[in-house]
Amino acid sequence: MNLEGKVAIVSGGAQGIGKAISLLLAKHGVKVVVNYNRSEKAANELVEEIKTLGGDALAVQADVSNFEQAKHLVDSAVSHFGTLNILVNNAGITDDALFLRMTEEQFDRVINTNLKGVFNLIKHASKTLLRAEQARVINISSISALTGNAGQVNYTAAKAGVIGMSKTLAREFASRNVTVNVIAPGLIETNMTKDLPQEILDKFMQTIPLKRFGKPEEIANAVLFLASDLANYITGQVIQVDGGLVI
Ligand code: NDP
Image (cartoon, rainbow, N blue to C red):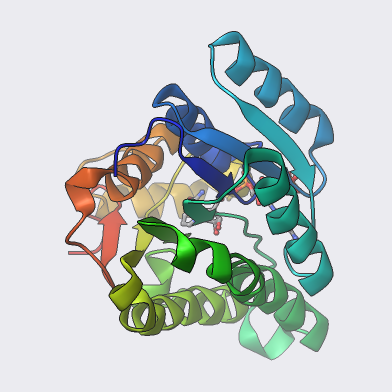
């Protein structure tokens, strides 16, 4: 897809990996709806930054785990920019505990944001996406969905669910030229990982063949590729961006 003038929603698009995705798409001519939940200041600053660079963007508050708020996000994007071509489901949280200690609330909160949130946005966006000549859904999962990760039964269940959902939707949406793909990041330097104990970081580092953690921009590069014409014939796939952590 030629990206100039296309419209994208990036959930959780104001900081971390989402910010890098919003900025890179905007630099390639995409009008970006920067969704945020709590980071209002960061979202407004990012919209200003994109406009200063000559792009166009809009900040919209919505908790993606809430069905009505997800609708508000999609409706705001379509009414402001007239259509929607690219949906990037990036919003996500962790709330780790070993299974024996994990509460029902911890499980529900992570599933509701990381899995139900993806359903909510695709559900509300699907009519517009399916009407577009060409459209993309790009979902951010995690390599931990592929391997499992002690302490993350909620997170890995949600992220594996995103992969299953994406493969099914790739089949359902293909006849309308809407592709659905997944990016599974490895360990990326953001707020999500900054408080991990040093011994866990060291353990990860030993198992990453490229011997470094990833940068948000390296996930954004994969999103840009999947959003572009270069990926016209790719659907239902999981692309790992993890420095070789899971081979
Ligand atoms: P951050 O914690 O830096 O950012 C999380 C983002 O999700 C924020 O923009 C936040 O918005 C948004 N968010 C959280 N809850 C909601 C909600 N209910 N509604 C809307 N937005 C919400 O994490 P990352 O940038 O690292 O993570 C981005 C994605 O990448 C996540 O899906 C994560 O699971 C995935 N990932 C990250 C990895 C890593 O190593 N960092 C590895 C594998 C996957 P706000 O600040 O406005 O509340």
